[in-house]
Length: 77
Image (tube, rainbow, N blue to C red; front, side):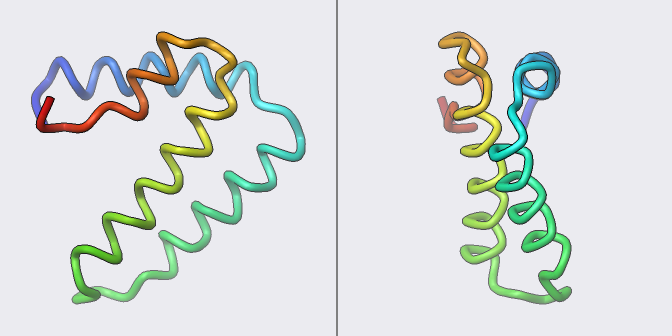
């Protein structure tokens, strides 16, 4: 992941956090809890899927098409 991608994700996450509603915040907390409970050495594909879920919840919460795209963007793009 390059510096530009990190900056875009940070900005989009800030937008999402200002727009998030209580039900979506509950979903985000559940996703973050799931990610934080992943033990070290867990298979990468499952770890990546859990992280992707967190970004998906953030993307849904934005209500902003640019922020949603920035959050959901594939790092290989």
